[in-house]
Image (cartoon, rainbow, N blue to C red; front, side, top):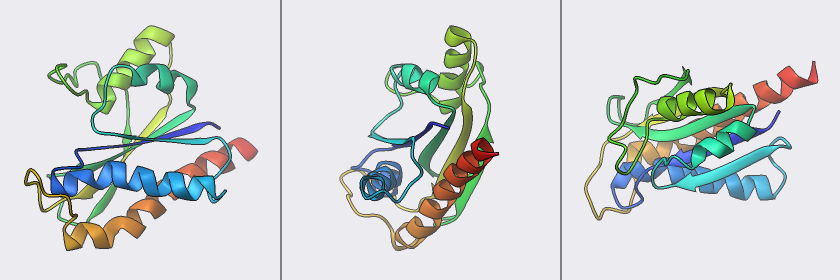
Length: 158
């Protein structure tokens, strides 16, 4: 199963950088062959409409983002479903469920989708470092993404 991992967030807003930072770390491990075949990784500042074409090609997508509504350093894994009511401002970014709904509407189906989020503590502009609690959560977040990839691989093997 082709798995697409998309880590997104602003690299200049402290803990909001956790998504692209984790995507970069996973991409480094992927280059060394430490992830299942068929895994693709993208690090992005924001989710844009162009991602829908990439979603069409995936059997599973895992979004990685920081969360303001989760205790700092807590890793949460949630399934996502296409939701056309999850509308964003459409000016600069989109909600993952909105993009899944676009994929379903345009192409007749959407991939299985998950959100792995890490609760953040520091969101200041111009702040390039992760808070200690988010830094400590990085291994757990990578483990959560790897578990989802391995489940996808095991499901296709049977």
